[in-house]
Length: 608
Ligand code: C2E
Ligand code: MG
Ligand code: MG
Image (cartoon, rainbow, N blue to C red; front, side):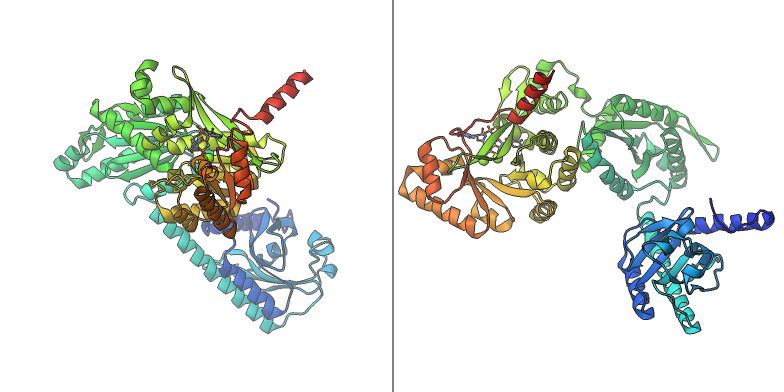
């Protein structure tokens, strides 16, 4: 660490100062402030300081080990500088004084400083240290000008008051952080509580989409009630504390152990894990917890039963993952205590047995890569030019051949697999779409249930980031069914997705599910007329009038209309006549595997 103030003779002084510096840095860490977000309370403080002293720049600067980091800046667009450039690093050496540099260009300490002889051209500096009650100077509130200035005693007194206000804000920040920690901790064992674990899981689960799985173990103490009843709650509590200690000792650094409630613990294995690693950790935990616990002369022997689940293999949402691990634990308990159950292990049945459990087969199909996408083009009705493509999922079933989505999408929705299916489609569709060089949009169908799921936004973002697809090229199609779930959540998610640039389409309009009320409730960008509706437009005058009305209404709402299932030239002409500009259907193309990927492969092949 370069403190830059010592000479070689003053070794004793140096040791004292280094001791102080360590103490000072420990104090700074304690405030949990460095690298936090902007905070309007600090922003206001620097704005006021800048206005009060009539200077272009005011900062709350915190001096870290090797840099100064700005909690708030007025008039400066840097968040940090090396500590060796920092004026404040000098100011904090005298915690009870305001350091004033009237003209840095003539001051030997600063005239060669890059902040002085290049942008941002510091010239005048005044910094009042922010000093904690224990005497540690964490940084300063400083004001800076690009021309020389003087600073009166009254100015110094005022700047000191600004520094005192900054300290109050730091204290407030620390208290709020502390409260947040306490809300996440179990007071008995000091482990994370349920809330703490769920918060951590939320952060971990969306990156698992990129293939780096995480694992969850749900542990339940066997016969804990008997211990409580026979030995009393005080001993029961000691037992829980001891178990917490053992669990902590048996997992890797970075894994999170939580007490979920009562005698249940949940462990999140946050580093990438596979089924083998999950089982290995669980077996180690079973062994550790089996040994008797000595409390007040009693040797108490309890064991644990564990259920394990993996994301994204068994679930892709936080609550589904906990649920899957819990379910595995319950089945293990039914088979006898002290065991390990792994989610989905019943699946290890011969393939024919799966036909009686289609949802298991579907879950396996995702793992085994039996699903694939076809794309159907969407064109300008007048010219036939392609404007976009819609991804349609298919299942290459080992016994039944290629299955259309109508055969398995409803099944996925019925047995809680739709989020997994939709996430798979989203990731695959974005990856395939990103490989397309043409200027098209790409539609992905998602189930109405998923749009209300709290992971939909983060998963879409992850799929976009992972693939590099421009969000403005993605359209999400939803068919409104009775099961859209929480309307307020769905609307909030649609808004967030739209803010990212993703467009939203209401699919199958005219089928009875997707009704006018949906257009009113949700801010859709696109309306897809169902093929039954399209057929009606071509059938008679009445159908045409209804069609014309819908297209006009959509135009008024600024919603684009795409007609689906156009099979004949007459249908295309009828739609064009009522003002519908875009269409999709067998008239132009059936769905096929991404044509742009085939041409890429063909080119690669030709190049070999
Ligand atoms: P959709 O989104 O309305 O997709 C259009 C369906 O109409 C597709 O059937 C397409 O092949 C079919 N189609 C297109 N042009 C014509 C035509 O000219 N004539 C006729 N008769 N049919 C045409 P597909 O692929 O069987 O999909 C059926 C539905 O399954 C889709 O309707 C969509 O609601 C759902 N689906 C498809 N892929 C996915 C997916 O990845 N996730 C979800 N959640 N649902 C999907
Ligand atoms: Mg669709
Ligand atoms: Mg449709």
